[in-house]
Amino acid sequence: MSDGSGGGRPEEIELRIGAELTNLPIIRSLAASIAMRADYDLDSIADLKLAVDEACSTLITRASDGANLVCTFTVAKDEIRFQVSIKSASDTAPSSDSFGWRVLTTLTDSADSWVERNGQDGSRQEHLVHISLAKRRAEGPA
Amino acid sequence: MTNTQSSQTGNRSDTGYEHLTPLFAEMANLAEDDPRRGRLRNDLVTGHLPLAEHIAARFSNRGVPREDLVQVATLGLINAVDRFQPDRGTDFLSFAVPTVMGEVRRHFRDASWSMHVPRRLKELNLAINAASAELSQRLGRAPTPSELARHLDLSPEQVFEGLEAGNAYHSMSLDEALSPNADSDSLGETLGEPDSALAGVEDYESLRPLIERLPDRERQILTLRFFRHMTQTQIAERIGISQMHVSRLLARTLETLRQGMLADDPD
Image 1 (spheres, rainbow over the protein chains, first blue to last red):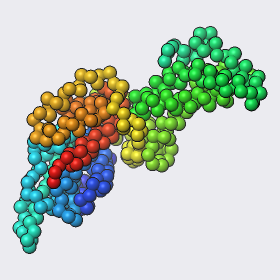
Image 2 (image 1 turned 120 degrees about the vertical axis):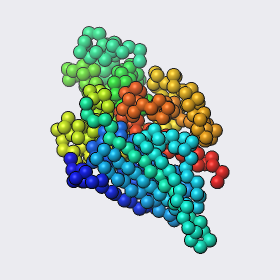
Image 3 (image 1 turned 90 degrees about the vertical axis):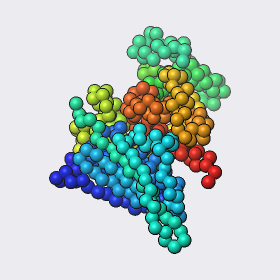
Image 4 (image 1 turned 180 degrees about the horizontal axis):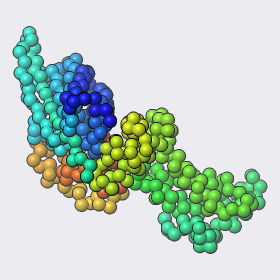
């Protein structure tokens, strides 16, 4: 197994892609590929895929026109962290009482969401909405 | 499905189909254009239907709807009736069983893949699926790609390839997607559950009708994963399909719910 990060230094993989639902399969397969190559078990791979799907769909619905999703995977020894952000006209973070949030928290070990209220560029208000989640490697082989 | 013992092809004296045997000879003796051939052929196919149903049942719970399998097996049976030559000295069942099984296997290999995937990858994916079920049993959790590679004596790269090929697998026919019923025994007990568990969720009102509209099996999988916190592997075992199939069904269900919520949203 090459885990790509010699001395346990976390590896970062970044993807910038149009905030369109049709782009979800690309992000999803990148997530699966990363978890697979980190030798996560099949359940964890599937969970991470679904969680990434959910997080990105949530942000796509609040994207400003033409905005890009900026996705970062940080692969540490026993944890994959996924952070995604979008430019949005809305300055409210996804609600942690929603069903979608329950999906995210069930599928991951931690999930968080916040808004960076950006300065106004011209008359237009643009904010950055972030979601961050982490999936830890399941308890090692018995 | 009147007589399940009828598949005991080894025991030729008691197959439940003996009364049909003379019809083959009778049909073979008729001229090609004799109108009685059609009736005999019909009787032979109908008479052997339990055989097709039995073979279909042996392949059920593998992600292809039972009705599709019965249909495919019946087609195989019709082929077998048409091609069987009673003067060759073998009995019909030893000819028909492999023919029908072959038809069903081919269906798994070909019809269930939504895009063209080389046969090598399909077989690799099936092998990984089987190994994953076996290892899950042994380990009490889902295996990792490296464990699969070791078990199958493959390189990790080959396992990655096989797992990725699974993404092209289209295990749901349109029929299944539209049909509200699934044939799981344990279904009843979980059906009412999302209601109470969901009450705390703020979008409960718009979500509830969407969940109610889900096919039973999808609703069950959703409940087990998000309200009972079972893993996909545990769910797979519980309802008798593969983990990869659970994964696909869950992905599809969540997408359906998201789209439904969006459509519901006034802004």
